[in-house]
Figure (tube, rainbow, N blue to C red):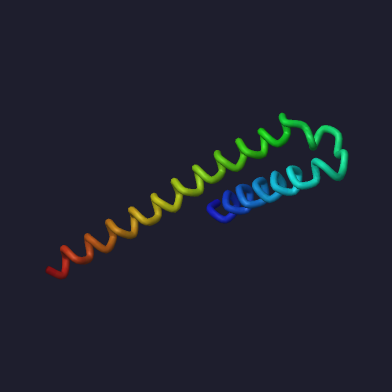
Length: 74
């Protein structure tokens, strides 16, 4: 799930960048509209947020596991 969210966030920001750059050169119709670029930004923000939450949860679980092992050895 983590990899999927990371791919979604990276691809949406990449597509956003391409659309911003190509805005002056190519007319892509709906894809050059502000609504679509805003949607890409929202997708990026949401997927990055959930990815960060999963990473933090994983790190917290690892810390708790290591603390538990440390208590058992002491």
